[in-house]
Length: 259
Image 1 (cartoon, helix red, strand yellow):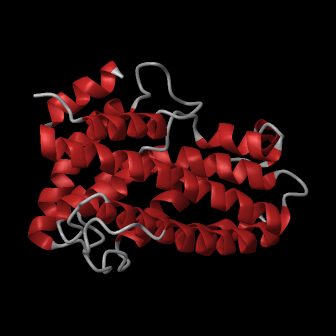
Image 2 (tube, rainbow, N blue to C red):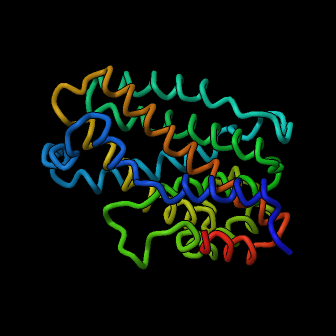
């Protein structure tokens, strides 16, 4: 069985989106300044604080009613409205500086998760299912290549394989208990694993916002780029999942690697 030409084009598009440069490279190109300069301006042990903030933001977003949209499969996603909302929160964060990130990050993460769910719906996912909800959260671990990756760790299917066991356990848990119980061990482990990768991108965002003269306008632009990046990851991820449902996971993985 071979992929139809349209499906092959879609898979090529997905690979371009998923294997594109990470958020750090995109921010650097946007502001014209290497974000390494921003890392030098972050307070001591800021990476520990970001790790805690990221996990808290994902937990809050997961347990907020972001999966309540109508399940009209195939309709176009409303990317622009989510971008405007995240840009607004970025402007507030940029105005008040790094201390405001603990307030801004949970809000922007929740908006991004709703946008991801909207994209999943547009690619044919049934967002009322536990599997689709977990796949939406999984997108935050698919932030593209990072400076912390080596050749053995980067790559879309490598990250998915690393998450596979915790994805299965989290899906099984919420099928029995629902997604509302925050202390659920299986769900907590999954969120921690996702947060470990998502926090890298959040650190890069924080470093960019720490650069002098970024301010409110710069914070809005960086947040817009941030959600745009994860919307791309979501689009690629859910194209792959749509094609896996049609052709089977092994065939899609093999074709993806051949492209």
